[in-house]
Structures are given as structure tokens and as C-alpha cells.
Image (cartoon, rainbow, N blue to C red; front, side, top):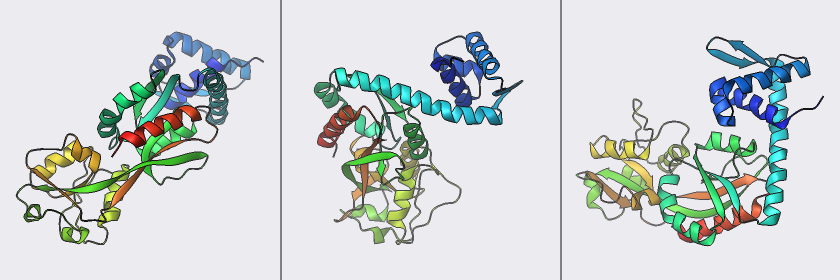
Length: 297
């Protein structure tokens, strides 16, 4: 039989989204077309791959195994296309770039103009994911490169540090510690530390920095964004740690919040690029990383 790559893409889309309509939209086809092609695929294979029920789409056991292999086939096909394109012009064409929610909004405004000047033929397609889903999509071939906090579990990936940024303490503006020009981690002893929800690596990094200071984390609060943290700090609910780029951006001059650096040596986070070892876009990734490293903190 003759397997068609587009049919495998349809199947993977259904596996990812568990919805025929959304899968069709991702693949830029109508839902009837996608459904009909998947029915033909099942008939050709002589296997049921998808369980169809009202308001519920799931894969059979055989479907799960075939999807796992289909992902590898699609990744290899995409690598062939990317390799051919990179040989013609390695610094041109689309590059799928993902950033952490605690990095993207603060890094991109600083580096985007420089990227456009240095790499005018590169077409950045931007995504935002937390660490775990970003790494999963990198390994699955859905992304070309991710910008995130290091270290991470690589397992088939490579990484390169781009820059380091210090942590800064955000305090209510009338907090006694706001009278200090710089702070030590020990100064935070006994404070209520406001943090992001589980899944954000910034949460883990802040906990690591403050682990020996005896700070208290409220059990009834988890923020979904740095902006939520800022608002809670402004109300006097506690203190938090922010990466330096966030302080230079939207937090600068924020009402109700005092920002104080740590005394040297300040705790830092390491930000780097991660990509697949087999990536055909290495030249573009290296060029992009060089620009980011030059124009980040």
C-alpha cells in the first residue's frame, strides 16, 4: 500500500487535539476531507485507529502505536525539506522559535529589531510554552529552537547558554526592606514569598534561591503570570523574585512596587537555546543565538 504523508499529518493532528474540527483547521482542510482521508487510511491498513463517539475522540491501542511512528516519519520528512532549504540559503525561511512566558515578553522587544537587521530573510514563527511542553515539542519536531532557563533534561537535544540575568526582589513600596539599596537572600527570612503556579521553571528557581532563607509560601496562592505577581506585591500580600529583564520592562516604575537588587554575587538564572541534535537548521539557530546573546542583558 502507498502511505501518504498528509494522511499521517491528519492522524497526528487528531491525536494531538482529540477533535476533528480543530485537527482539520490545523491542517488547513475541511473537516469532511480530513475525516474521509482517515477513514481511507484505516481501510487501507485494515485497522481501526480512532474511536469516534459523540463529544469524544480517542485513539485505539493500534492508533497510539501508529501515531508514535507517524511522528518520527513526519519529523524526518520535515528535516529533509529543512535540509534542502538550508543548503540553498541557511539563514532564510521559517524558523519555529518558542520562548518561556517569563522570557518572551521581556526579551523579544530588546532583540527583535536586531534580529530583523542581522537576519532579514529569516521568518520567525513565535510560540510560548512552559518548559515541559516546549521540550516535548522540540523532540517531536514541532519546534526548531526554544529559549528557556537552563539546565534541562536534554535527551536527544543540545543546548547553549546565551546570557545570564540576575534576580531582583519586588517588595511593597512601604515595606521596611525597601529602605535598603541592596538586599541579601537572608534578608528575606520570614517573608511571604509569592510564586508562579507549578510548571513554571521560574517558580522552582525562586524556591531554590530562597530555600535557605526561611521564607513562607502561602498555600492558597499561585500566580499564572508575572503581572499577577506584580499586582499581588502592590497590594502588600508578599514579596517575589523577578528576572532582570522583566524589571527593565513593564515593571519599571510600577505603582506600589519597590524593586531592589541583590548584593553581589546576585543569584542568577541561565538562559539558553535548545534544539534537536539532528536539526538541519543549525546555521540559523547559531546566528539567532549570537544576536540574542549580543543584545540581551
